[in-house]
Amino acid sequence: MSLEARVDGVWQAVGDPVPVTSDGAAPVVDLPADVRADAVRVVMTAQDNLHMIVSEIEVMAKVPGEAAPLWVASKKYSAGAEVFHDGSYYRATWRTKQEPGVSAYGSWQEIVRAGDGTAVWTASRIFKARDVVVHDGDTHRATRITRGEEPGGRHGPWRLVRS
Image (cartoon, rainbow, N blue to C red):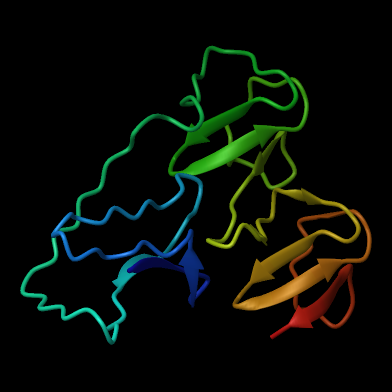
């Protein structure tokens, strides 16, 4: 059994497959906290040596701990600080009190990755030359440092790697 997340309309495996044993133990599949997905699905694959009868699947969601602290308006953050705010993770580019997500060119970069660990393009994130991102289902590589320049155009800092 495995977990897939839909990011930018493309289903991607998240984490390693989990074996289903014949002892009846419930398998547990975890979705990393910083994977932003449109949807999540459980994938069960039939095996020759194992007979599965599935009458019910129980899906439970829990957060075992916060991957990053919640943003606090009254707090000053140092460069590199990470926070969770309005459903996304952010990293401070420089010392700031600014609210994350209010500007693509502000002091915070929205940090999102696909299930396989590849960065998902966000307008506020600073990418360096040779960084690889997923955007609209395609994979792109940066040719220079860039921020706010969307992959997929004919001109600009991105080259299509895989479509």
